[in-house]
Image 1 (tube, each protein chain N blue to C red):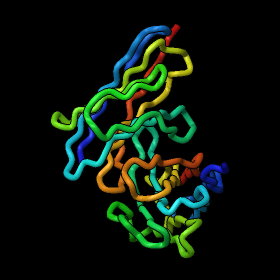
Image 2: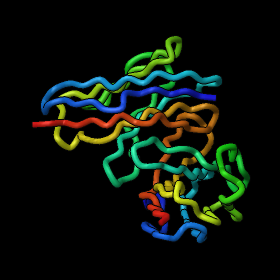
Image 3: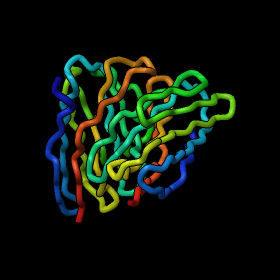
Length: 115
Length: 108
């Protein structure tokens, strides 16, 4: 079974530029998450989708971050304009449903460096 | 909101046993996950507890006490490859909130 796919793996941009990350979850997984992980910290939830609807985006900095999952499958996360403090790994994760016991599977992450 | 606390770092020697604690405060608790994360890699699933008690899986065990807001991950017969960050994550409805992680260093 294919895992969660993310691209690009690595990206270096200058501050005030824009960047987009793509995620394709495990086939059949209805729930998709985007997490931000700053070096030395645990992942922080940015947004959670159930199919193509947003469940939780309370910690998404909406003035610069946006995410969509239009067809309820793959998703994109965009940052515009980027700030230095956005340097982090952006982890996409998915699970089969919203039942609390379903394991969340993570992709390998997209590493962003803002200079 | 949720508050999840774990020690920042721990050290142990190969072959030993180590216990990593996690305390949490949350409303609407629906379970607790432990994940392992090696440097530069994605977190991988270790265990899930929803009821009080001990769940054993090979060299790894996880314990939960819901009344105390407390969990621990027990690693036995430590190996060098166990050097990693261990993340405690609390489930509230369908959302996972992670602690900051405990960096475990296993030395020979």
